[in-house]
Image (cartoon, rainbow, N blue to C red; front, side, top):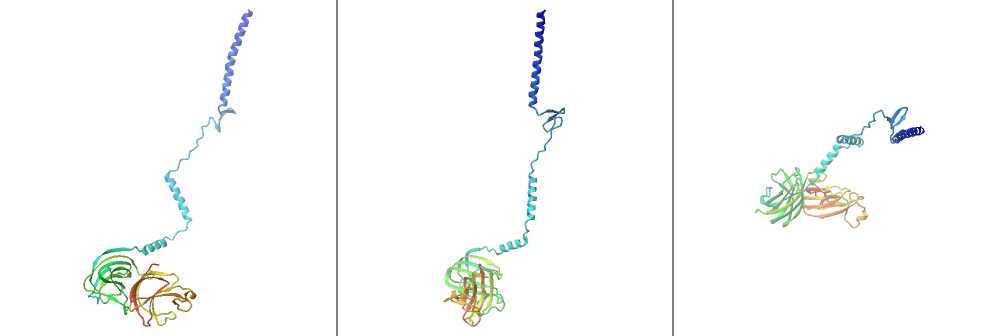
Length: 341
């Protein structure tokens, strides 16, 4: 009996341990699980982070990348806003200035060839021969001629047409007696050379009746007479206003100025003249022993006076340009003049 009771008691103890063991394991497992979750029991409601677990998760809208067209439009708007702060330019003035610069731009033209002369059509030149290099034009030609001829030749530049009544002793060329040109006639007594010229027509000439042949190359620009950079005309000299030059004659082509002129002159006069350039003004003390010119005894210029013939062509630089004689009688001159600065 006693053994039976002990056996029952032992079985009961074993069963109790078997049941208690799994229960403790389950509680431990739930405890470990609770450590790995953010859910907690608050007022009998489960909380998942910043929301109740029963609420749906918040959806955060992602910013879509801007389309290329949108970016371009934003940049365009930004540029337009900046442009409002920039002072408006005078587009009309800028356009006019650009057009003026293009109009004054001179691109040299070049021609070359071989010509056989023909009878000169000018009145009084019927027994002469003429080879026209650049025909008569309202524009002034400025350039260089290189030539080789079959005989000695003369070089011709025409200026004009000149105004009525201005043919007063200088050489004239005309085909009809009405339209007249001043005639620059240069005889180098050679059959070849280089000539720097300015004029309204350029030709090679002989006083012989037989034709000649000339091979040439000419580089030139054309200039509209504007009274600023290009001049052509005919004038009669006046009494020289310089102190000590009262009995002389002067044809003032370019009036004195502070900025120096530079350019080229071709002319023909009714008598031999001197080319005058003035340098200055400068202190009188700097001109001791040197030629000088003054209109009032106070303002002085250095004087460069070059004797020449009744016609010629020359490059020059100075603060004034004139033609001069030591005679008291007026002379007349026709000329073409192109400034380079």
